[in-house]
Length: 247
Image (cartoon, rainbow, N blue to C red; front, side, top):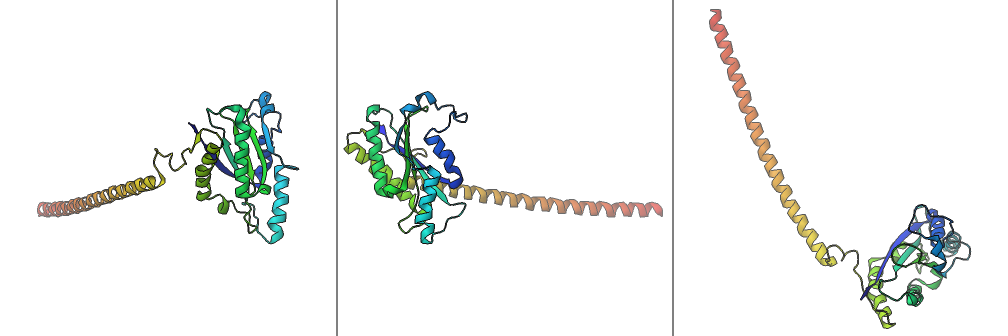
């Protein structure tokens, strides 16, 4: 059975032109990514295209829906959350558009259709075909906040619900592992439990090392004191011998 896979990445305003040029293959060459085969780029799909550009469309939307309603936008604000969905290995390539449209409809229902500015599928790179979906993270109360929208609950809901919907539509796909579960195949709870146990073991080791260090310091101090006493005794004996010889 094929594995469902997706991940998210946030981008700031200054990064959007480069993202747009990459997604829509607006450059003639891609020296930084030799896996891109421009000769195959005509096979790519554009499901949602910006009216002007990714940057300009996002700017217009943010000015109207965020700044226009008194919201605050700073230089470190994330203007776009890009979700990347891999087309699972083993599925028929001729059903990729159907698969991607189901994913797009799910995300439109979650974020709002107007908040998805760009959606492009790449078939001209090495590895699996994949979908780039660029979303302006504007909340219902008019705030630009990827932190409030791209939550752990959102990530889990996509991993849990989308594979079910895809399966209902005839795609033999199952939930993949989340980042938390992929750590040695452990669940989030088990991973946290193991980390807590490791932390306790480290605390015990540190305590033992501190005790050993203190014992060594104490022995060193005793030896230093003994050495000092011996030196004093030898000095006094030397003085006595000198006094006797002087007589």
